[in-house]
Amino acid sequence: MLGETREKFGLFLGLVGVICFSLTLPATSIAVEYFGTTVVGLGRTVVAAILVGVVLIVRKEKLPSPSQFKSLLIVAVGAVLGFPLLTSWAMESLPVSHGAVEVALLPLATAGFAMFRAGEIPSIKFWVSSIIGSLAVIMYALHLGFGQLQLADLALLAAVIILGLSYAEGGKLAKELGSWQVIAWAIMIGAPFFIIPVGLNLSTEMLHAPIQAWVSLIYLSVVSQFLAYVAWYSGMAMGGIARVSQIQYLQPFLMIVFATVFLDESITSFTLVTAMIVVFSVILGKNAPVTKKVAVSGKS
Image 1 (cartoon, rainbow, N blue to C red):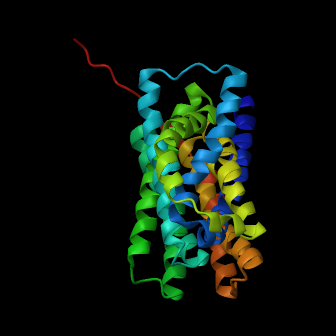
Image 2: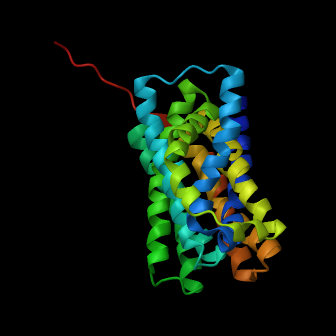
């Protein structure tokens, strides 16, 4: 009973994380127009490092072990460097709805890496739900004419792959290091390397950016880069990486809703129908059994 309650709370935290992440592309689309790719993609980590550094010092957190540090490097490459930088560059030329469709492939990437990095074995029911969700977003992309890949598309796909690995590794590490500690240490690892490139790309013109651009940059730095990951990694640690990853199927449609509200992008009935299909796949996948690999010892 306690385990079931823990899993449900993990799913709830995963949902909170997904809602927060769903505002990332819309916020990036607004901020990158005024601050540029480097400041938005890497600067968010530099700003987040100030908050994280204070928290780590106040709580007197111990340094990660060497083995944990290796996993943190994987998290940092995906969640701190690759995904923010690649999506910032892609959002200079793509609408949020376009990016949202491709980011929808993230649950499959996360679940796939989870099998290798966390020893989870999703059931047939899980993969059926994943296929349903993936086919839905692929049909959605084809309907909107997103079939031809541009360099920005390739950047988003690369971002999805490395973030999927980062999610799986972070979810696994959160069980021993702590949920918020994973992204906190990943931020501290990456931030020192970003200070110089961010500084070189700052300009006085940025001071005249409108309030929505500054709010977007602050949101990306505090929420997208740190607080959302706290909820997300906590959810995966409590509810299981592969299972909680199913909630990500809601993310592209939440992104489109936020893009409609904040960026005046249109939303169609086809989008709503596809969203309902994807929600069904999430419900199906969340109840699918997920087992753990069991090591078998050989006889001497």
